Length: 88
Image 1 (cartoon, rainbow, N blue to C red):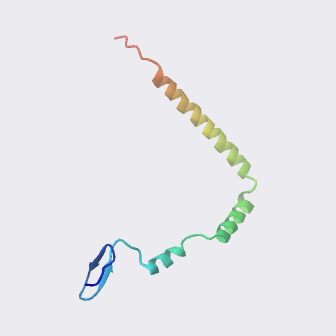
Image 2 (image 1 turned 135 degrees about the vertical axis):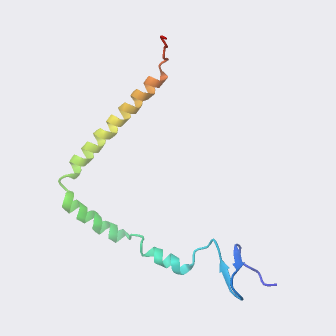
């Protein structure tokens, strides 16, 4: 009796189809979609050249936005902690 791979099912007459596994040819196709180090480096250099002067402004704005968000979240938590008195 021949051994079958885990998760293997019989398909058409005489063929075995493995379900739940990625075929090696599909992995090779996916490998082309993964950016390489040099590709990311080139994209980073292009972005730096195009937006180099605006990057500090954007980072400053992002930092202040995060700070405001944290202050707002902390204020909401403090409001939730205070007991509410019903005057009805």
